[in-house]
Length: 285
Ligand SMILES: NC(=O)c1ccc[n+]([C@@H]2O[C@H](COP(=O)([O-])OP(=O)(O)OC[C@H]3O[C@@H](n4cnc5c(N)ncnc54)[C@H](OP(=O)(O)O)[C@@H]3O)[C@@H](O)[C@H]2O)c1
Image (cartoon, rainbow, N blue to C red; front, side, top):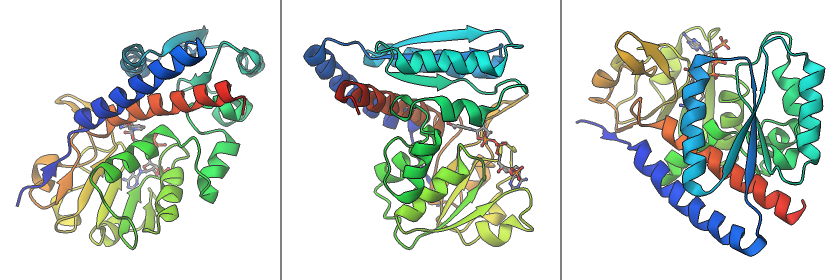
């Protein structure tokens, strides 16, 4: 049986439509245009494309998106001062940091300085703590994207065996919390996991974000599993994910493609978070 292929572009389109409607209502009620600033440090070609796509998406839903650019060798203190100014600027409703940041700058430090109410990425320790404790407010965009896909497919997570291949702060850790909050049984794999097949072959839902092409082959996937591929890798054959799509789709029940799966939903989830930070600012919370 061939798997159902999840159309992330369609899901993203539905999300954008709802956000556009809500943003339009709020703008006309409060006469305030939602405005988001992205801090860019140096130039990274791989993040330029993502930024361009996100800026276009912002425009489509009526969110004003601008960039604050710094040279690659800027000091951490100067970036922190800039964040503090954005925190107190009433005309800015959300702040993002474009990754990767250069080595002299701590990503965690920057995230901790962003005011929680303006934290579009949901990576500030306060928002991460809320996600962990089950009091979810602003959820990191990529885990939110995975959850959105599962909800769109009406998956009841209670008691499901879920395997996540990734234990980064932006993907695996918050995603684990979201799934535990919904009573799934979660195993998290990473490079030190002895044999990932031992876990993946039992997974009702397999979520992979390793950034390794063809890491997930048919033989290590459970029959009828829901396979969600977060990985994005540029290869000579174009953009691909972690999953050997052509063979795994013959065994899985549902599968997300790359491109056109998790990626567009993640951008739409970033807009969802921008709407949240805008509302936080309007409400003064
Ligand atoms: N689609 C989207 O919207 C979206 C959003 C964000 C990221 N991504 C993509 O997702 C991937 C991961 O991003 P990230 O920022 O989380 O990267 P990361 O910090 O490098 O995380 C990769 C994770 O995969 C694990 N891993 C790597 N090789 C493995 C292997 N052979 N077996 C088992 N685990 C392995 C790593 O373990 P260790 O930490 O132990 O090395 C780590 O936990 C990248 O391809 C990125 O482009 C996609």
